[in-house]
Image 1 (cartoon, rainbow, N blue to C red):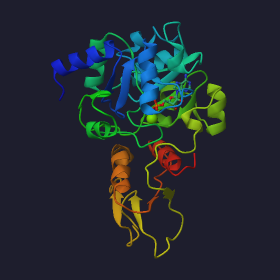
Image 2: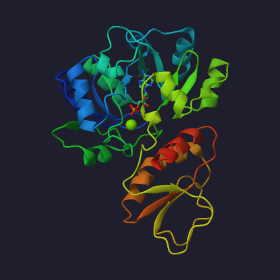
Image 3: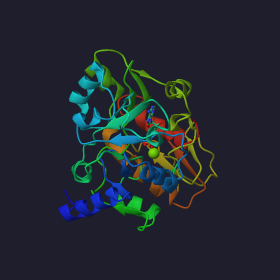
Length: 317
Ligand code: AMP
Ligand code: MG
């Protein structure tokens, strides 16, 4: 681990004092606060500019700690054994320990065990579960390096732990467990979840996502994960005079007039594409062009999560 024990201890003190820590995880960097401290959690919302109706994910060190916050079902126990630590968030009935502000008043809570040594060390050192959404201003591209976090918040607001670049690169898959409904595709594929559960896992559309939570959620917001530069999905030929940056899946059929180009994975590896996605979008956003044009990737495995981010960056939900 690139972070020292002394840095972990200092960050744990910040958490215990009600402050915010930029926490590396295997998915993206999180903006972490004690999940048991309602004032600290409120600080997450205000610092991110996140609407209060949008509930947070609680990060725990292991399944046992998770079951203090929510009531596991047989499916939940099976998934925890197979997938944690890892990029699966489970939505389960909450216990009285969880403050209302964490769940936006819902009777369910979203929990996961991150697969990152720094995150696990911080949760253990702080001695409490950590609420953590992605460490970016609401609606913007998620951070996958410590530098991305540091560029977006003041050092006086957030202590950032540098745990290196995130291995998975897109957010966790969010599953309502009983009955299984994937509220957000992410770092663990739907096919893998179905294999573990031995039953099909439906992918919610925006309206059923809303019904599942009973309230609006980011899944409902058409524009999310968006760069500042207007982004659109490629359809057909591109007009000759346009000035744009281009996000390519494999580097094939890249329009020659593109001012800047990012290739997600030349060899067609969806895991590599996920890892590279957000940093590539940031670079294209900094290219000084009027628009970004993106290709979608194959709609399979991690491709569901990648395409979900691209469609929402394009404002298409
Ligand atoms: P973020 O923390 O920004 O990665 O987003 C967390 C995601 O989990 C959002 O899409 C939330 O809507 C979703 N989420 C968190 N808690 C719940 C819950 N209790 N029920 C349904 N979805 C939830
Ligand atoms: Mg986010």
